[in-house]
Image (cartoon, rainbow over all chains, first blue to last red; front, side, top):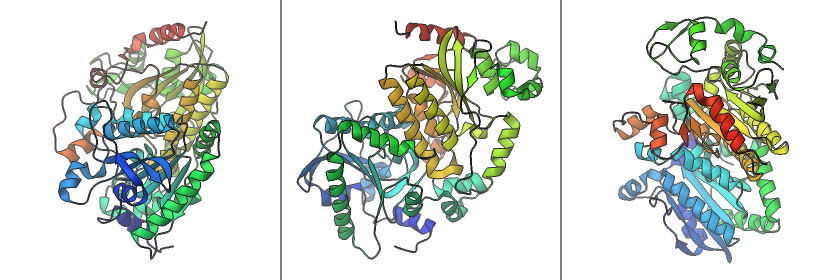
Length: 260
Length: 271
Protein backbone atom coordinates (compact mmCIF):
# COMPACT_ATOMS: atom_id res chain seq x y z
CA UNK A 1 0.00 0.00 0.00
CA UNK A 2 1.22 3.51 -0.77
CA UNK A 3 1.77 6.20 1.82
CA UNK A 4 0.22 9.05 -0.11
CA UNK A 5 -1.81 11.65 1.80
CA UNK A 6 -5.51 12.00 0.95
CA UNK A 7 -4.85 15.03 -1.22
CA UNK A 8 -1.93 13.35 -2.96
CA UNK A 9 -4.38 10.58 -3.83
CA UNK A 10 -6.82 13.17 -5.19
CA UNK A 11 -3.98 14.48 -7.36
CA UNK A 12 -3.09 10.93 -8.47
CA UNK A 13 -6.73 10.14 -9.24
CA UNK A 14 -6.90 13.25 -11.43
CA UNK A 15 -3.43 12.66 -12.90
CA UNK A 16 -3.02 13.83 -16.46
CA UNK A 17 -1.80 10.44 -17.63
CA UNK A 18 -3.93 8.26 -15.39
CA UNK A 19 -5.77 5.56 -17.36
CA UNK A 20 -9.54 6.07 -17.47
CA UNK A 21 -12.46 4.03 -18.81
CA UNK A 22 -11.23 3.99 -22.38
CA UNK A 23 -7.91 2.40 -21.39
CA UNK A 24 -9.50 -0.36 -19.36
CA UNK A 25 -12.03 -1.15 -22.07
CA UNK A 26 -9.29 -1.29 -24.70
CA UNK A 27 -7.03 -3.51 -22.62
CA UNK A 28 -9.55 -5.73 -20.91
CA UNK A 29 -12.32 -6.34 -23.43
CA UNK A 30 -11.90 -8.47 -26.54
CA UNK A 31 -13.85 -7.80 -29.76
CA UNK A 32 -15.24 -4.57 -28.26
CA UNK A 33 -17.99 -2.91 -30.28
CA UNK A 34 -18.77 0.65 -29.23
CA UNK A 35 -22.46 1.52 -29.19
CA UNK A 36 -23.54 5.12 -29.35
CA UNK A 37 -26.40 7.38 -28.38
CA UNK A 38 -29.26 7.63 -25.92
CA UNK A 39 -32.04 7.32 -28.56
CA UNK A 40 -33.45 10.55 -27.15
CA UNK A 41 -31.26 13.46 -28.05
CA UNK A 42 -27.58 12.76 -28.57
CA UNK A 43 -24.39 10.85 -27.95
CA UNK A 44 -22.17 11.82 -25.04
CA UNK A 45 -18.42 11.63 -25.59
CA UNK A 46 -17.69 11.44 -21.85
CA UNK A 47 -19.13 7.93 -21.72
CA UNK A 48 -17.83 5.11 -23.89
CA UNK A 49 -20.14 2.13 -23.91
CA UNK A 50 -20.53 -1.10 -25.78
CA UNK A 51 -20.29 -4.88 -25.78
CA UNK A 52 -17.51 -7.43 -26.01
CA UNK A 53 -15.87 -10.36 -24.25
CA UNK A 54 -14.09 -10.48 -20.91
CA UNK A 55 -12.13 -13.74 -20.68
CA UNK A 56 -14.63 -15.26 -23.08
CA UNK A 57 -17.67 -13.98 -21.21
CA UNK A 58 -20.00 -11.63 -23.13
CA UNK A 59 -20.29 -8.37 -21.19
CA UNK A 60 -21.67 -4.86 -21.47
CA UNK A 61 -19.11 -2.27 -20.50
CA UNK A 62 -19.57 1.42 -19.76
CA UNK A 63 -16.68 3.74 -18.99
CA UNK A 64 -16.17 7.42 -18.30
CA UNK A 65 -13.42 8.91 -20.44
CA UNK A 66 -11.93 12.40 -20.72
CA UNK A 67 -9.52 11.80 -23.61
CA UNK A 68 -5.77 12.41 -24.01
CA UNK A 69 -5.33 15.31 -26.41
CA UNK A 70 -6.86 18.73 -25.86
CA UNK A 71 -9.09 18.25 -28.92
CA UNK A 72 -10.34 14.96 -27.55
CA UNK A 73 -10.85 16.46 -24.11
CA UNK A 74 -13.01 19.21 -25.53
CA UNK A 75 -15.00 16.63 -27.50
CA UNK A 76 -15.47 14.55 -24.35
CA UNK A 77 -15.98 17.71 -22.25
CA UNK A 78 -13.21 16.63 -19.90
CA UNK A 79 -14.95 13.44 -18.88
CA UNK A 80 -17.98 15.09 -17.31
CA UNK A 81 -21.06 13.16 -18.52
CA UNK A 82 -24.14 14.96 -19.83
CA UNK A 83 -27.70 13.66 -19.28
CA UNK A 84 -27.34 11.89 -22.66
CA UNK A 85 -24.35 9.96 -21.29
CA UNK A 86 -26.31 8.65 -18.32
CA UNK A 87 -29.27 7.81 -20.55
CA UNK A 88 -27.01 5.96 -23.00
CA UNK A 89 -25.54 4.01 -20.09
CA UNK A 90 -29.00 3.08 -18.83
CA UNK A 91 -30.18 2.10 -22.29
CA UNK A 92 -27.27 -0.30 -22.63
CA UNK A 93 -27.78 -1.67 -19.12
CA UNK A 94 -31.38 -2.51 -20.06
CA UNK A 95 -30.01 -4.17 -23.19
CA UNK A 96 -27.55 -6.18 -21.06
CA UNK A 97 -30.41 -7.28 -18.83
CA UNK A 98 -32.39 -8.48 -21.85
CA UNK A 99 -29.50 -10.62 -23.07
CA UNK A 100 -28.45 -11.66 -19.57
CA UNK A 101 -24.99 -10.12 -19.79
CA UNK A 102 -22.99 -8.88 -16.80
CA UNK A 103 -22.35 -5.12 -16.72
CA UNK A 104 -19.03 -3.47 -15.90
CA UNK A 105 -18.84 0.27 -15.17
CA UNK A 106 -15.59 2.25 -14.99
CA UNK A 107 -15.97 5.50 -13.07
CA UNK A 108 -13.60 8.44 -13.23
CA UNK A 109 -14.90 11.99 -13.50
CA UNK A 110 -14.81 15.20 -11.53
CA UNK A 111 -18.61 15.11 -11.74
CA UNK A 112 -21.65 15.38 -13.96
CA UNK A 113 -21.38 18.03 -16.69
CA UNK A 114 -22.29 21.45 -15.39
CA UNK A 115 -24.07 23.73 -17.85
CA UNK A 116 -27.29 25.47 -18.83
CA UNK A 117 -27.99 22.86 -21.53
CA UNK A 118 -27.46 19.96 -19.09
CA UNK A 119 -30.01 21.51 -16.71
CA UNK A 120 -32.47 22.09 -19.56
CA UNK A 121 -32.26 18.43 -20.46
CA UNK A 122 -32.63 17.20 -16.88
CA UNK A 123 -29.22 16.35 -15.45
CA UNK A 124 -30.83 15.66 -12.06
CA UNK A 125 -33.56 13.51 -13.58
CA UNK A 126 -31.02 11.51 -15.61
CA UNK A 127 -28.93 10.66 -12.54
CA UNK A 128 -32.01 9.90 -10.41
CA UNK A 129 -33.34 7.57 -13.10
CA UNK A 130 -30.05 5.65 -13.18
CA UNK A 131 -29.97 5.15 -9.40
CA UNK A 132 -33.57 3.98 -9.48
CA UNK A 133 -33.36 1.70 -12.53
CA UNK A 134 -29.96 0.23 -11.62
CA UNK A 135 -31.56 -1.04 -8.40
CA UNK A 136 -33.82 -3.15 -10.61
CA UNK A 137 -31.45 -4.40 -13.35
CA UNK A 138 -31.64 -8.20 -13.35
CA UNK A 139 -28.02 -8.78 -14.33
CA UNK A 140 -24.78 -8.61 -12.32
CA UNK A 141 -23.31 -5.09 -12.07
CA UNK A 142 -19.69 -4.43 -11.10
CA UNK A 143 -18.65 -0.79 -10.65
CA UNK A 144 -15.00 0.20 -10.48
CA UNK A 145 -13.74 3.64 -9.43
CA UNK A 146 -10.59 4.12 -11.50
CA UNK A 147 -10.03 7.88 -11.06
CA UNK A 148 -11.94 10.62 -9.26
CA UNK A 149 -15.39 9.52 -8.15
CA UNK A 150 -17.07 12.91 -8.24
CA UNK A 151 -20.35 12.86 -6.30
CA UNK A 152 -23.73 12.10 -7.92
CA UNK A 153 -22.22 12.09 -11.38
CA UNK A 154 -20.08 9.11 -10.33
CA UNK A 155 -22.77 7.35 -8.30
CA UNK A 156 -24.99 7.32 -11.41
CA UNK A 157 -22.87 4.36 -12.63
CA UNK A 158 -22.06 3.12 -9.14
CA UNK A 159 -25.10 1.14 -8.01
CA UNK A 160 -23.40 -2.25 -8.36
CA UNK A 161 -23.48 -5.66 -6.73
CA UNK A 162 -19.79 -5.08 -6.26
CA UNK A 163 -18.11 -1.70 -6.00
CA UNK A 164 -14.33 -1.61 -5.97
CA UNK A 165 -11.68 1.08 -6.20
CA UNK A 166 -8.15 1.34 -7.46
CA UNK A 167 -5.79 2.08 -4.58
CA UNK A 168 -5.19 5.72 -5.50
CA UNK A 169 -8.67 6.57 -6.69
CA UNK A 170 -11.00 8.67 -4.55
CA UNK A 171 -14.79 8.88 -4.16
CA UNK A 172 -16.48 11.82 -2.51
CA UNK A 173 -19.72 13.70 -1.99
CA UNK A 174 -17.97 16.98 -2.90
CA UNK A 175 -14.56 17.98 -4.26
CA UNK A 176 -11.99 18.92 -1.60
CA UNK A 177 -11.83 22.40 -3.16
CA UNK A 178 -15.60 22.82 -2.91
CA UNK A 179 -15.57 21.57 0.65
CA UNK A 180 -12.73 23.93 1.66
CA UNK A 181 -14.59 26.86 0.12
CA UNK A 182 -17.74 26.10 2.08
CA UNK A 183 -15.98 25.23 5.32
CA UNK A 184 -13.15 27.77 5.45
CA UNK A 185 -14.00 30.11 2.55
CA UNK A 186 -10.59 29.16 1.17
CA UNK A 187 -10.13 26.73 -1.73
CA UNK A 188 -6.38 26.55 -1.03
CA UNK A 189 -7.16 24.49 2.07
CA UNK A 190 -8.29 21.62 -0.16
CA UNK A 191 -5.62 19.37 1.32
CA UNK A 192 -7.16 19.68 4.80
CA UNK A 193 -10.61 19.18 3.32
CA UNK A 194 -9.46 15.97 1.61
CA UNK A 195 -8.47 14.65 5.03
CA UNK A 196 -11.78 15.44 6.75
CA UNK A 197 -13.89 14.10 3.85
CA UNK A 198 -12.45 10.56 4.22
CA UNK A 199 -12.51 9.96 0.50
CA UNK A 200 -9.71 7.45 -0.07
CA UNK A 201 -10.23 3.85 -1.12
CA UNK A 202 -8.95 2.78 2.31
CA UNK A 203 -11.54 4.99 4.09
CA UNK A 204 -14.37 3.66 1.95
CA UNK A 205 -13.32 0.07 2.55
CA UNK A 206 -13.47 0.76 6.28
CA UNK A 207 -16.99 2.21 5.92
CA UNK A 208 -18.01 -0.94 3.99
CA UNK A 209 -19.00 1.23 1.02
CA UNK A 210 -16.67 -0.79 -1.25
CA UNK A 211 -15.70 -4.46 -1.24
CA UNK A 212 -12.24 -4.40 -2.70
CA UNK A 213 -9.15 -2.28 -3.26
CA UNK A 214 -7.00 -3.05 -6.30
CA UNK A 215 -3.31 -2.41 -5.51
CA UNK A 216 -1.37 0.11 -7.54
CA UNK A 217 1.98 0.52 -5.76
CA UNK A 218 4.99 -0.32 -7.90
CA UNK A 219 2.72 -1.78 -10.59
CA UNK A 220 2.45 -0.74 -14.23
CA UNK A 221 -0.90 0.16 -15.78
CA UNK A 222 -0.81 -3.17 -17.63
CA UNK A 223 -0.34 -5.10 -14.38
CA UNK A 224 -3.09 -3.13 -12.61
CA UNK A 225 -5.41 -3.74 -15.54
CA UNK A 226 -4.62 -7.45 -15.50
CA UNK A 227 -5.25 -7.75 -11.75
CA UNK A 228 -8.48 -5.82 -12.07
CA UNK A 229 -9.54 -8.07 -14.93
CA UNK A 230 -8.95 -11.15 -12.79
CA UNK A 231 -10.96 -9.66 -9.93
CA UNK A 232 -13.89 -8.77 -12.20
CA UNK A 233 -13.80 -12.21 -13.82
CA UNK A 234 -13.94 -13.98 -10.46
CA UNK A 235 -16.76 -11.78 -9.19
CA UNK A 236 -18.76 -12.39 -12.36
CA UNK A 237 -18.48 -16.14 -11.76
CA UNK A 238 -19.75 -15.67 -8.19
CA UNK A 239 -22.58 -13.31 -9.20
CA UNK A 240 -23.71 -15.52 -12.08
CA UNK A 241 -24.48 -18.28 -9.58
CA UNK A 242 -27.10 -16.03 -7.97
CA UNK A 243 -30.74 -15.95 -9.08
CA UNK A 244 -32.11 -12.70 -10.49
CA UNK A 245 -33.96 -12.02 -7.26
CA UNK A 246 -30.84 -12.74 -5.20
CA UNK A 247 -28.89 -10.27 -7.33
CA UNK A 248 -31.51 -7.56 -6.73
CA UNK A 249 -31.69 -8.28 -3.00
CA UNK A 250 -27.93 -8.34 -2.60
CA UNK A 251 -27.62 -4.98 -4.39
CA UNK A 252 -30.48 -3.42 -2.42
CA UNK A 253 -29.14 -4.65 0.92
CA UNK A 254 -25.60 -3.56 0.13
CA UNK A 255 -26.78 0.08 -0.04
CA UNK A 256 -29.56 -0.37 2.49
CA UNK A 257 -27.10 -1.02 5.31
CA UNK A 258 -25.01 2.13 4.70
CA UNK A 259 -25.77 4.73 7.37
CA UNK A 260 -28.34 2.55 9.04
CA UNK B 1 -51.18 12.38 18.07
CA UNK B 2 -51.95 16.01 17.50
CA UNK B 3 -49.32 18.16 15.88
CA UNK B 4 -49.14 20.47 18.84
CA UNK B 5 -48.28 17.58 21.16
CA UNK B 6 -45.70 16.37 18.71
CA UNK B 7 -43.87 19.64 18.50
CA UNK B 8 -44.41 20.38 22.20
CA UNK B 9 -45.24 23.99 21.52
CA UNK B 10 -41.81 24.82 20.09
CA UNK B 11 -43.25 26.19 16.91
CA UNK B 12 -46.22 27.67 18.69
CA UNK B 13 -43.83 29.90 20.59
CA UNK B 14 -41.53 30.72 17.70
CA UNK B 15 -43.98 31.09 14.91
CA UNK B 16 -46.03 33.92 16.38
CA UNK B 17 -43.17 36.30 15.74
CA UNK B 18 -43.23 38.47 12.62
CA UNK B 19 -41.11 37.35 9.66
CA UNK B 20 -39.27 39.35 7.07
CA UNK B 21 -40.00 38.59 3.43
CA UNK B 22 -36.68 38.01 1.67
CA UNK B 23 -38.04 39.34 -1.60
CA UNK B 24 -39.56 42.68 -0.57
CA UNK B 25 -37.87 43.00 2.85
CA UNK B 26 -41.21 43.81 4.44
CA UNK B 27 -41.82 42.66 8.00
CA UNK B 28 -45.06 40.67 8.08
CA UNK B 29 -47.21 39.95 11.12
CA UNK B 30 -47.44 36.20 11.68
CA UNK B 31 -51.24 36.18 11.74
CA UNK B 32 -51.31 37.86 8.33
CA UNK B 33 -48.82 35.34 6.94
CA UNK B 34 -50.69 32.39 8.39
CA UNK B 35 -53.96 33.61 6.90
CA UNK B 36 -52.21 33.78 3.52
CA UNK B 37 -50.56 30.28 3.43
CA UNK B 38 -47.17 31.81 4.44
CA UNK B 39 -47.18 33.81 1.23
CA UNK B 40 -46.09 37.42 1.53
CA UNK B 41 -49.28 39.55 1.41
CA UNK B 42 -47.18 42.45 0.18
CA UNK B 43 -45.36 40.96 -2.85
CA UNK B 44 -46.88 37.45 -3.18
CA UNK B 45 -43.52 35.70 -2.68
CA UNK B 46 -43.76 32.12 -1.46
CA UNK B 47 -41.95 32.17 1.88
CA UNK B 48 -40.50 28.91 3.20
CA UNK B 49 -42.82 26.90 5.41
CA UNK B 50 -41.46 25.01 8.36
CA UNK B 51 -42.37 21.36 8.96
CA UNK B 52 -45.11 22.21 11.43
CA UNK B 53 -46.82 24.71 9.13
CA UNK B 54 -46.66 22.28 6.23
CA UNK B 55 -48.10 19.37 8.18
CA UNK B 56 -50.81 21.60 9.60
CA UNK B 57 -51.75 22.75 6.10
CA UNK B 58 -51.92 19.24 4.63
CA UNK B 59 -52.89 16.70 7.33
CA UNK B 60 -56.44 16.33 8.60
CA UNK B 61 -56.73 17.51 12.22
CA UNK B 62 -55.27 15.17 14.85
CA UNK B 63 -54.30 12.50 12.30
CA UNK B 64 -50.54 12.97 12.07
CA UNK B 65 -48.48 10.27 13.74
CA UNK B 66 -44.66 10.59 13.61
CA UNK B 67 -42.26 7.74 12.81
CA UNK B 68 -38.63 7.47 13.92
CA UNK B 69 -38.70 10.96 15.35
CA UNK B 70 -36.08 10.03 17.95
CA UNK B 71 -33.33 9.36 15.38
CA UNK B 72 -30.53 11.90 15.56
CA UNK B 73 -27.31 12.29 13.60
CA UNK B 74 -23.87 11.40 14.88
CA UNK B 75 -20.66 12.97 13.71
CA UNK B 76 -19.38 9.78 12.08
CA UNK B 77 -16.46 11.40 10.25
CA UNK B 78 -15.56 13.63 13.18
CA UNK B 79 -16.12 16.48 10.76
CA UNK B 80 -15.19 20.00 11.91
CA UNK B 81 -18.05 22.15 13.29
CA UNK B 82 -20.67 19.48 12.54
CA UNK B 83 -21.71 18.89 16.16
CA UNK B 84 -22.20 22.63 16.66
CA UNK B 85 -24.21 22.93 13.44
CA UNK B 86 -26.48 20.05 14.48
CA UNK B 87 -27.06 21.58 17.92
CA UNK B 88 -27.87 24.96 16.42
CA UNK B 89 -30.27 23.43 13.90
CA UNK B 90 -32.05 21.43 16.60
CA UNK B 91 -32.46 24.51 18.74
CA UNK B 92 -33.70 26.65 15.86
CA UNK B 93 -36.26 24.14 14.61
CA UNK B 94 -37.16 21.98 17.59
CA UNK B 95 -36.60 19.00 15.30
CA UNK B 96 -34.13 16.13 15.68
CA UNK B 97 -33.34 16.10 11.97
CA UNK B 98 -34.16 17.80 8.67
CA UNK B 99 -37.04 15.54 7.74
CA UNK B 100 -40.24 14.71 9.63
CA UNK B 101 -41.83 11.40 8.65
CA UNK B 102 -45.12 9.85 9.62
CA UNK B 103 -48.58 8.86 8.57
CA UNK B 104 -51.66 11.05 8.35
CA UNK B 105 -55.00 11.37 6.65
CA UNK B 106 -55.46 13.73 3.72
CA UNK B 107 -59.21 14.33 3.32
CA UNK B 108 -59.73 10.98 5.02
CA UNK B 109 -57.22 9.03 2.90
CA UNK B 110 -54.43 7.42 4.91
CA UNK B 111 -51.04 8.44 3.54
CA UNK B 112 -47.38 8.14 4.46
CA UNK B 113 -45.94 11.63 4.50
CA UNK B 114 -42.54 13.29 4.79
CA UNK B 115 -41.76 16.96 5.15
CA UNK B 116 -38.26 18.38 4.86
CA UNK B 117 -37.44 21.57 6.76
CA UNK B 118 -34.85 23.87 5.19
CA UNK B 119 -34.24 25.61 8.53
CA UNK B 120 -32.40 22.42 9.58
CA UNK B 121 -29.00 22.63 7.82
CA UNK B 122 -30.71 23.47 4.50
CA UNK B 123 -32.47 20.09 4.81
CA UNK B 124 -29.32 18.41 3.55
CA UNK B 125 -29.41 14.60 3.51
CA UNK B 126 -27.09 12.70 5.81
CA UNK B 127 -27.48 9.16 7.09
CA UNK B 128 -30.46 9.90 9.36
CA UNK B 129 -32.48 11.72 6.69
CA UNK B 130 -31.69 8.87 4.28
CA UNK B 131 -32.56 6.23 6.85
CA UNK B 132 -35.84 7.89 7.88
CA UNK B 133 -36.96 8.24 4.26
CA UNK B 134 -35.97 4.64 3.48
CA UNK B 135 -37.90 3.35 6.50
CA UNK B 136 -40.92 5.45 5.51
CA UNK B 137 -40.98 4.00 1.99
CA UNK B 138 -40.44 0.48 3.36
CA UNK B 139 -43.30 0.94 5.83
CA UNK B 140 -45.55 2.39 3.12
CA UNK B 141 -44.70 -0.62 0.92
CA UNK B 142 -45.53 -3.08 3.71
CA UNK B 143 -48.78 -1.30 4.61
CA UNK B 144 -49.76 -0.49 1.00
CA UNK B 145 -49.83 3.27 1.55
CA UNK B 146 -49.17 6.05 -0.94
CA UNK B 147 -46.34 8.48 -0.11
CA UNK B 148 -46.65 12.25 -0.34
CA UNK B 149 -43.38 14.11 0.23
CA UNK B 150 -42.65 17.81 0.64
CA UNK B 151 -39.16 18.15 -0.75
CA UNK B 152 -36.64 20.90 -0.11
CA UNK B 153 -32.92 20.40 0.24
CA UNK B 154 -29.50 21.75 -0.54
CA UNK B 155 -28.43 18.21 -1.50
CA UNK B 156 -26.34 15.50 0.13
CA UNK B 157 -24.82 16.57 3.47
CA UNK B 158 -21.13 17.34 3.10
CA UNK B 159 -20.44 16.69 6.78
CA UNK B 160 -21.15 12.97 6.42
CA UNK B 161 -19.08 12.58 3.25
CA UNK B 162 -19.51 9.41 1.23
CA UNK B 163 -22.16 8.07 3.62
CA UNK B 164 -24.43 10.97 2.56
CA UNK B 165 -23.81 10.29 -1.12
CA UNK B 166 -24.78 6.64 -0.67
CA UNK B 167 -28.14 7.70 0.82
CA UNK B 168 -29.15 8.80 -2.69
CA UNK B 169 -28.88 5.21 -3.91
CA UNK B 170 -30.42 3.79 -0.73
CA UNK B 171 -33.53 5.98 -0.82
CA UNK B 172 -33.92 5.53 -4.59
CA UNK B 173 -33.92 1.76 -4.04
CA UNK B 174 -36.68 2.04 -1.44
CA UNK B 175 -38.71 4.31 -3.76
CA UNK B 176 -38.35 1.66 -6.49
CA UNK B 177 -39.58 -1.17 -4.26
CA UNK B 178 -42.56 0.97 -3.25
CA UNK B 179 -43.32 1.74 -6.90
CA UNK B 180 -42.90 -1.91 -7.96
CA UNK B 181 -45.65 -2.75 -5.46
CA UNK B 182 -48.04 -0.60 -7.49
CA UNK B 183 -48.11 2.27 -5.02
CA UNK B 184 -48.28 6.00 -5.63
CA UNK B 185 -45.53 8.49 -4.75
CA UNK B 186 -46.02 12.23 -5.20
CA UNK B 187 -43.09 14.53 -4.40
CA UNK B 188 -43.99 18.20 -4.06
CA UNK B 189 -40.85 20.17 -4.90
CA UNK B 190 -40.53 23.37 -2.91
CA UNK B 191 -37.98 26.16 -2.80
CA UNK B 192 -35.13 25.21 -3.00
CA UNK B 193 -34.60 21.62 -4.24
CA UNK B 194 -31.08 21.08 -5.53
CA UNK B 195 -28.12 18.75 -5.96
CA UNK B 196 -28.37 15.16 -4.84
CA UNK B 197 -32.04 15.44 -3.92
CA UNK B 198 -33.07 16.52 -7.41
CA UNK B 199 -30.79 13.70 -8.59
CA UNK B 200 -32.62 11.09 -6.50
CA UNK B 201 -36.05 10.93 -4.84
CA UNK B 202 -37.02 14.48 -5.88
CA UNK B 203 -37.34 13.37 -9.51
CA UNK B 204 -38.66 9.84 -8.92
CA UNK B 205 -42.37 10.47 -8.40
CA UNK B 206 -45.24 9.00 -10.39
CA UNK B 207 -46.51 12.55 -10.42
CA UNK B 208 -44.14 15.43 -9.65
CA UNK B 209 -45.68 18.65 -8.39
CA UNK B 210 -43.86 21.92 -7.73
CA UNK B 211 -44.76 25.16 -6.00
CA UNK B 212 -44.69 28.33 -8.13
CA UNK B 213 -41.25 29.85 -8.67
CA UNK B 214 -39.48 27.17 -6.60
CA UNK B 215 -35.78 26.80 -7.41
CA UNK B 216 -35.23 23.25 -8.69
CA UNK B 217 -32.00 22.04 -10.25
CA UNK B 218 -28.92 19.88 -10.07
CA UNK B 219 -25.86 22.14 -10.35
CA UNK B 220 -25.84 25.45 -8.51
CA UNK B 221 -26.63 28.45 -10.70
CA UNK B 222 -23.53 30.36 -9.57
CA UNK B 223 -21.31 27.35 -10.28
CA UNK B 224 -22.76 27.04 -13.79
CA UNK B 225 -22.18 30.73 -14.46
CA UNK B 226 -18.60 30.56 -13.21
CA UNK B 227 -17.77 27.33 -15.05
CA UNK B 228 -19.29 28.19 -18.41
CA UNK B 229 -19.10 31.98 -18.40
CA UNK B 230 -22.59 32.00 -19.90
CA UNK B 231 -25.32 34.33 -18.72
CA UNK B 232 -28.19 32.35 -17.22
CA UNK B 233 -31.56 32.75 -18.95
CA UNK B 234 -34.38 34.48 -17.08
CA UNK B 235 -36.26 32.12 -14.80
CA UNK B 236 -33.48 29.50 -15.03
CA UNK B 237 -34.08 26.46 -12.76
CA UNK B 238 -37.43 27.78 -11.56
CA UNK B 239 -40.49 25.52 -11.43
CA UNK B 240 -41.87 27.16 -14.59
CA UNK B 241 -38.58 26.40 -16.41
CA UNK B 242 -38.84 22.71 -15.45
CA UNK B 243 -42.49 22.56 -16.51
CA UNK B 244 -41.57 24.06 -19.88
CA UNK B 245 -38.79 21.48 -20.35
CA UNK B 246 -41.04 18.59 -19.43
CA UNK B 247 -39.55 17.55 -16.09
CA UNK B 248 -42.49 18.14 -13.76
CA UNK B 249 -46.18 17.37 -14.10
CA UNK B 250 -47.77 20.48 -12.66
CA UNK B 251 -47.24 23.67 -10.71
CA UNK B 252 -49.85 23.98 -7.98
CA UNK B 253 -50.52 27.03 -5.86
CA UNK B 254 -50.24 26.56 -2.15
CA UNK B 255 -53.89 27.26 -1.48
CA UNK B 256 -54.86 24.43 -3.84
CA UNK B 257 -52.27 21.86 -2.73
CA UNK B 258 -54.36 19.87 -0.28
CA UNK B 259 -57.31 19.62 -2.68
CA UNK B 260 -55.03 18.60 -5.56
CA UNK B 261 -53.27 15.95 -3.48
CA UNK B 262 -56.57 14.65 -2.15
CA UNK B 263 -57.95 14.41 -5.67
CA UNK B 264 -54.87 12.59 -6.98
CA UNK B 265 -54.96 10.18 -4.03
CA UNK B 266 -58.61 9.44 -4.77
CA UNK B 267 -57.92 8.85 -8.47
CA UNK B 268 -55.14 6.41 -7.54
CA UNK B 269 -57.09 4.53 -4.90
CA UNK B 270 -57.12 0.87 -5.83
CA UNK B 271 -60.70 -0.34 -5.86
